[in-house]
Amino acid sequence: MIDSSMENGLYGVHLATDIPVSIPLTDDELTLACSKGDIDGDWSIMCESVLKRTGYVIEGCLMIESIVIKGVVKDFH
Image 1 (cartoon, helix red, strand yellow):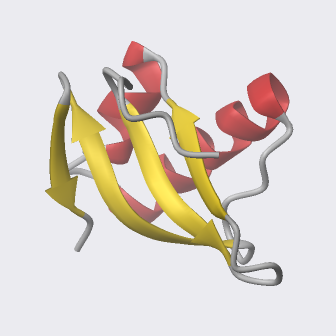
Image 2 (cartoon, rainbow, N blue to C red):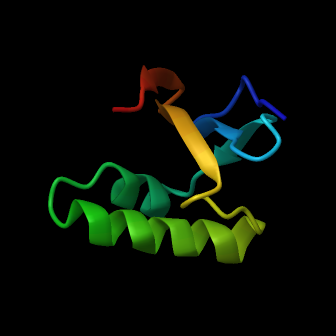
């Protein structure tokens, strides 16, 4: 389900079902998602945090299309 009022988060599509998803991110998760340092490591930590908090598996299951930062939707990659 897509949440068009999301302040910070990710929009994507579930690879197996082609269902659109929206995942709100906490401030800490957003910081990790936008990391300029250990990009792969920080992304993995963010994905683990989202999994524990929401049950969503991101890596290998979702095609992330955009990121929302302070209500502004930006292309992902």
